[in-house]
Image (cartoon, rainbow, N blue to C red):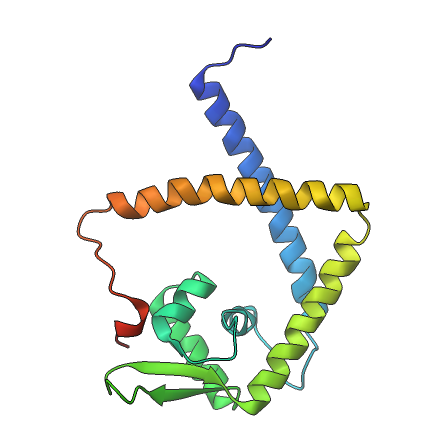
Length: 174
């Protein structure tokens, strides 16, 4: 049995994470290329990212969208501005607190979002459809396990940040 130091294991973790990141980037780029022409609008990568931040048909605060898309608030604001100008998104003032701005998909936006998600799922099916049922089950189980472990360390990091008290998303202001 091989005896490895903690530092050697951390180095191997880093190598695997880099490899996995690169694979995910290639998969993502492949999906983006296939999604380029899913509507009459030539979407930029950032606009597609903003549309992907909508997981449900509901109103989101700007901070929720920023978190979902993993972008900073100023970038999300710019993306929403562009999509609002195209008639895909609309801003709505919260009725309880007029300082809070929420964003939702317009009817046109819902159709485009559904088309984009459908295309993405088609591309994922093509890609992962090459795997056997056993490989798919193994991949899902491994991804669940990795997600669970990584959530532990990222949640711990959030707790350790001094002065980073977060308000609930519904109370956040734009």
